Image (cartoon, rainbow, N blue to C red; front, side):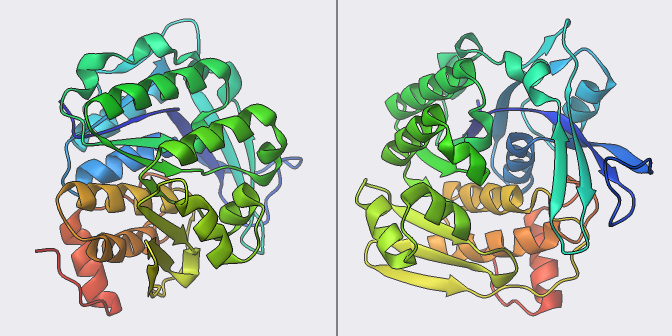
Length: 318
């Protein structure tokens, strides 16, 4: 059984061909691309050397099949992806603004992705689990939240570490059930992976060091603040260190944070230090944005090492 496990949505992404294209105007789109934040995370974890599995649901259609085949091709254990015959696989439509922002239209809540239940979470899946990864974006209905909480309980019983990437939009923080879920995840996780803004939204504290102190008081071992093109900062106990960014030309930012998280957790699972894991995670996020398509930017350690050497990094994964 897999050492790294996650639960959450699998979908395809269909993206605008041109920057500045809008949803209210007829235009060209390309895709479908395999996607879903949990799927991207687990694909990256596997490609960087850790045995990995995902619990999810897809429709009995080509969109589901393109995801299953991609994950299987990269070595992810797909046995726990259930096909829901009466639902279609979820779709994310994406357009890109001139300033780099994106607009989305999702069909997830009415798709097969919304059919994940606590019954999909079985104890035997976690027999060899070392890390269970919580995705905040997956907490979009009560049954999914129940499934995630059940998984946390089983993972903890197996002495697994819990990592948590909030990956959540600001407006959802007004939802009381989401707030409760975030609080649960913060009191549960060993590794917290927020973006700069997410840390502020979640804690309500705008001073970063104070915000970090407030979450680490909950018993979190590592907080890694993702800063996108500015790199990242790792906090451990009373110490912290910055990882410098890699300067690249951005093609598509979707999935970069998931590649970052997948690499970090995978390398920690393989016994690497938090410093080395964060170095490679930073490179993985930078590498991901140079590719078109959310899962097209996943990479092996060898590919990341080559990328780091080319851009100017010197860290080696021994």
